[in-house]
Length: 84
Image (cartoon, rainbow, N blue to C red; front, side, top):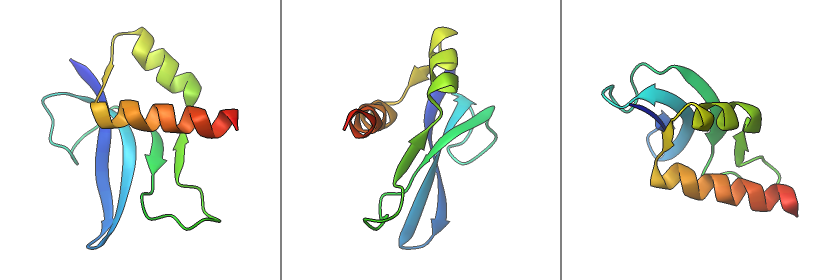
């Protein structure tokens, strides 16, 4: 099964997450199919904290990829940001 999930990067105490499409059986930070965005939980007010390529997200969900609960929350958060 293909999932849309977070892959952690960054340094100790300064997390940074890539939003990736990966096979469910691979490790969290291991091999992935495609990177479709990022999430920076400690972004300052003038920095971009989340970006998701909506066209690629729509494509992967259309072919059956399931988003993790955290990524679902981030998708909703990004949609609110765009609407404002």
